Image (cartoon, rainbow, N blue to C red):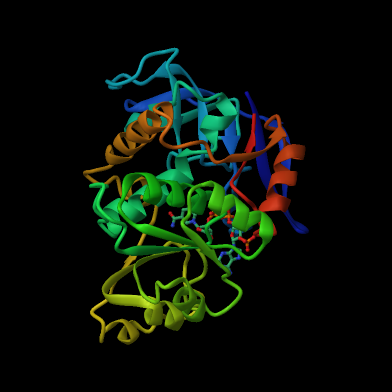
Length: 334
Ligand SMILES: NC(=O)c1ccc[n+]([C@@H]2O[C@H](COP(=O)([O-])OP(=O)(O)OC[C@H]3O[C@@H](n4cnc5c(N)ncnc54)[C@H](OP(=O)(O)O)[C@@H]3O)[C@@H](O)[C@H]2O)c1
């Protein structure tokens, strides 16, 4: 089958079009005929990871939409021909290939109202946003009360932020303040429903004060946390909750959270798949709920850039855009 592989040599790593062996399903696997994929910062991290000396060419990519082509002997929830979408497991080969294996517990039917490229934009970043808001920070779902408490989404215009804003505006009672540093990214956050936007390149506390929201109950941190740690401790209200998705570049001072009894969580979208947790099927549930909300018109796709078919040339272009850290919404190929 066709795939885009990453080969490492003395001068670094390069993406190349290749023919690789067709994979065979394990008992719980779906073999998916991939129609569209999206790219994520994890692809860049995995591309830069030091390969083992004897390592074969690797396939990256953990966001796909496609049709079930074959099923493993113990698959219960899917049949050949089903339209599906998923992020999968970072411990297995990625989805930048014609066919791809994924455990059915991580997969759900794709939103009926979306094209392949619109659907492929969603899984990884939406799972991360959903798990952070509802599983890690346990933010209550909407009761149509006043939006008394606030959420700060640090990095609102990227892939995760674009879904986090929508989830918080549509499914919770929170007042949503996003951050963006450019006019285009600011406009994008407002178009997704953010109630206010501040600039992450300037101190946060005075900007929140100027909005009349000097303290927030929740922070979703979608950037390296150590650089903003003390600012975030300052703007969080007593008993507030901070959830971070990006590995810290320096030790985080937990004592800064003590006086206000603040809570801190990491969100790792791949934790369930990596450790095969008992609630691994929870990702299927989230993707099902997400698809229903999309089909009901409550949430929309975060697709922003459709670059072309899945091949090495287009993936290199996608990686170059991602590396700039200025992406608005999601970059998709298919
Ligand atoms: N732990 C997990 O499970 C998980 C899952 C998904 C992603 N992540 C991580 O979460 C981060 C965000 O992912 P993503 O897919 O949303 O990335 P992305 O799409 O590449 O994010 C791009 C956005 O980042 C914003 N940005 C750049 N510098 C920033 C800063 N210093 N502070 C705040 N925002 C900044 C930019 O906004 P402006 O242009 O307005 O500056 C841009 O819109 C990445 O580091 C990724 O590796 C972790």
